[in-house]
Length: 157
Ligand code: B12
Image (cartoon, rainbow, N blue to C red):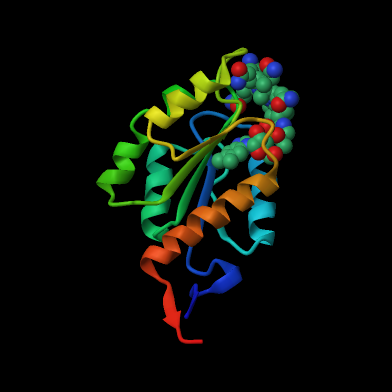
């Protein structure tokens, strides 16, 4: 017996919300990520720069998003992300959450930085050296897993 995902390689129905949180205006990273994810077949809603928590939550809720990707470059990610996951939970949003970029001010130990954002509720934490291909591969893994639980159908071989 084989198992196939509805939507197959196009990741159909699994919208990825992408944006730069807070007052941060660094746009290049999310532009590249949007292009890579779109090329890989994801439906991407790019909220752009200077996106509030409320805008992330509203978009995730209305799109029934599979993933919420938060970018931050300017060093204020920890403050900007306080309470985001509580708001997502209040909206009954169970999307996988990623954060990436330049997440700390100065030369912090990466393990510490990763812990901070895991504590805030992020499922995965990426540094500023992250290749777009690594993000695509990770999302394919995580969203296919989600699909397994909710949408996969069994087909007899
Ligand atoms: C270009 C730039 C600017 C431009 C931005 C233009 C624009 N509209 O985009 C301008 C001049 C406006 C600017 C302003 C500022 N900047 Co600036 N900027 C940069 C710079 C040189 C490059 C950023 C960039 O475009 N990189 C190229 C892209 C492709 O890479 P990326 O953004 O890192 O994204 C990749 C990864 O990080 C990752 N990624 C990013 N987001 C996410 C999200 C997820 C979910 C995942 C999985 C991965 C991921 O994937 C991306 C693709 O590979 C960096 C230094 C650097 N070398 O990174 C400083 C830098 C980010 N800036 C910095 C600072 C301090 C500022 C200012 C606060 C300066 C000031 N005092 O005014 C302001 C902030 C303004 C604001 N409101 O945002 C600091 C941040 C320091 C920190 N975090 O501790 C940096 C690191 C410079 C430094 N070394 O000090 N900046």
